[in-house]
Image 1 (cartoon, rainbow, N blue to C red):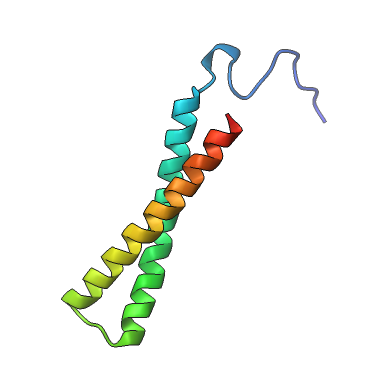
Image 2 (cartoon, rainbow, N blue to C red):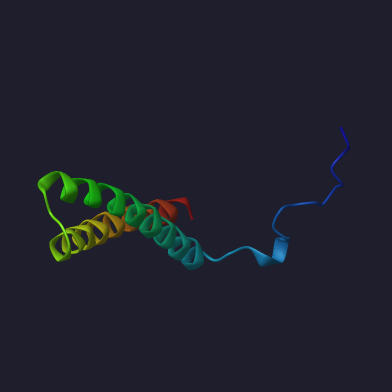
Length: 83
């Protein structure tokens, strides 16, 4: 196995992301993951309830906003605690 050169790091020393950048990135990642989960769960619940068309889109939109928002805040707070 080749040796890693001394002084090597994945992120250069002078370019560490700020705490605000980490929190923002956690919030965005959480919102995307929560939104994707909301599409799946909202669509499934809407189909199961017999919704079609506009009602199904409204149900999916509400579920995406709720799950994306809550999971985004959760991930943002978690990244803030890690700063």
